[in-house]
Amino acid sequence: MNAYAPFSIRPSAIAKSFLNNRQLIWQMTKREIISRYRGSVLGVAWSFFQPLVMLAVYSFVFSVVFQARWNTNVDSKVEFALILFVGLIVHGLLAECLVRAPGTILENQSYVKKVVFPLEILPWVKMGSILFHVMASLLVWGVFYLSVYHSLQWTIIFAPLVFLPLILLSMGVFWFLASLGVYLRDIGHISGVFATILLFTSPVFYPMSRLPEKYRQLLFFNPLTYVIEQMRDVLMWGNMPNFYQLFIAMCVGSLVAWLGFAWFQKTRRGFADVI
Picture 1 (cartoon, rainbow, N blue to C red):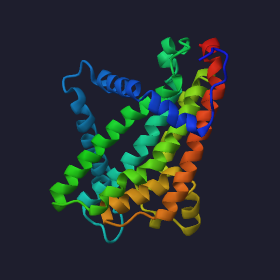
Picture 2: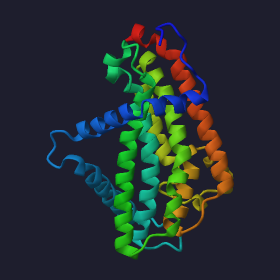
Picture 3: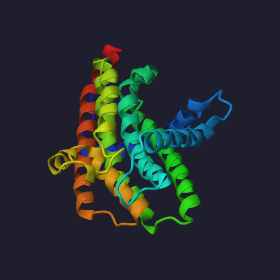
């Protein structure tokens, strides 16, 4: 590619870049996951041990210390823990993106001045690492659920479909913040605070029914609300996802992904000058 040629911002360029560089993305993702645990005694096992510890801690604090209950029909501390953990897994995906995205280009400065290197794949690499840990957490959740109820809800097959809009939206956010983090170094601190705000303004620790009606509508402007509610439906309650809401979420997620990608492509030419 000519060094001065414009980078494509067409939606099709997202799929084209991913498919053309899928082997490179795969290799870099594996390296990203392995390097995170290099030198530790437990190695990759930490990806399973950490969510298990967090599940135990949050369950103890909220169901034992604060005596929190999900609703009148859910009084079991074990069930409360499972419901809570689903919300934490969903929030964790977007939160990881918000925290890690601003430093993505800065951490890979050696690639910036290589004209032939496809910088737009770096967010895919980070997303691959994040999804690996999300799947590890879901596996821990599944084992815990099986140990209590001895079977899984058949609607669990819809979980990837429910997650897809959030993945698309998170990629858009990732491309946007990865670019913005090069020009505005404070964005990393701001996005970290925003991730915490999202945790408490999402139905992670409380059901939607606990909120007054006027606040419930506002909560749906939070992109995590739909995914958390639908994931609990398909994982916990055995309900089918709301396909109308899923369609809307897919449209929004796809739009955000394209806008974030377009921003990244428009601003990437200045990375080398700033770094």
